[in-house]
Image 1 (tube, rainbow, N blue to C red):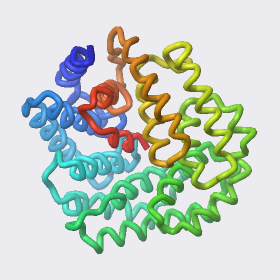
Image 2: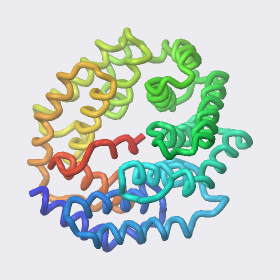
Image 3: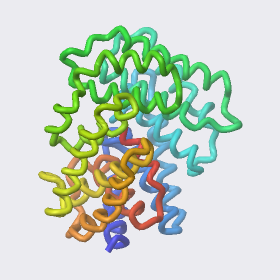
Image 4: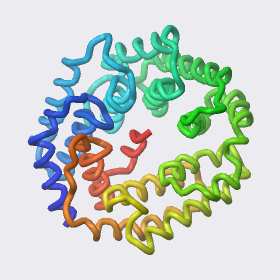
Length: 328
């Protein structure tokens, strides 16, 4: 069944992948390229890798100095995708050379372009990808400058007001990932303490939004007193999947990806490994409910068809789950 679904996804993306208007990671061609690199490995067919390289070359030809920087459709997501492909051996490149112009543009935006918190998180997400897994061949000066830019983002956040900010969870998710890298931790903990009233256990106990529940998991590193509330709320969501087969209001594909993300986040944070094992048992449930892959307009990339394909390869044991970090 998985092989059939993957064939259908590959066929659809071969026909339509390069027609996507956005070059980006979440909703555009970069996400399609990530899928085809993995699918080439899964199928043993180098044609799919060639196609993925063509997509990236097409994207590179379109990028210009005024390209948007947002993570979903713009430079930061594209750059994160290239960094991911290089780190995982799909592209035989030096990312410090290929992404030099990306780095310079992001550094310039941080210094000179006023940023809303959501835009700032796009820049931060890209920089996290750049510094998280340095190799022995990494340019030490480039690594240092990217770390310095992250510290500048933290400084901006330290002086920001968040009283009505709907991106609070994104901000703290970014900070918690950065905290794991032990970068500027005292300042991160000060910001977290200031924002603590927004993440009280009694609020988390009543949360039903699946995305927010996943965002809360890494926050346990910053707020010890929310662990019980987060675990119980996530358990409640998993119980609903156990009873109905899918998350409320979601299809089998979205539920499968949610379970995989839940498993990865609990593994990264080291909380309640029972959640990871329960997620494992339930992953077969959504797969069994796949009748067909829905090819929705505008949803062919990472947050759509390509993401579904990657999730299926992951459950089949043919793909590591670290691509989920590109989700943000």
